[in-house]
Length: 191
Image 1 (cartoon, rainbow, N blue to C red):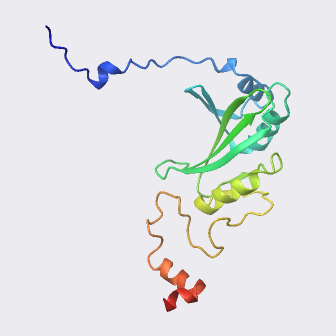
Image 2 (cartoon, rainbow, N blue to C red):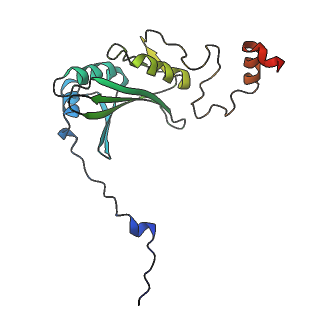
Image 3 (cartoon, rainbow, N blue to C red):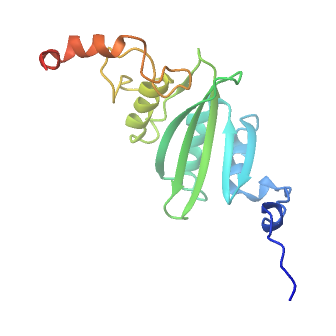
């Protein structure tokens, strides 16, 4: 009887080969390239999900194109989220997850921003973007131009800082929590 050697992690996982993807096979990419040839900055296809990074000045037009084109019909905005990468030249990323109900397809759009930049609001394309963009503003400080009501949605208006930034202190700015509680919750002080 021969002893079987235990498998290592390297032996268990088949080698992942990076396959060259022909992005022109995707109708979304073709439509964007056709209408806005200089808009696409990067393309990625991973685990059956297409991600298109675009220049910020094209986001509204691209969203309208993908929503209105009869071959794409991305008629549902699933979410808009912010991401913070403090070590990048453009540390903020706004991610738009779109869904086409008629075609049962998803696509992800991304825009990169620096601290002093803002991106156009897509509320004119999908009204549902209103609260999603307010949350990205509230948690990350990402500003959306022409937003109908850009103000905090989760935290009080006078809250200092943006808690989901990676450089935000874990317990908030020193002393701010206590100061805020004293000012806003006088009954708390009596406990």
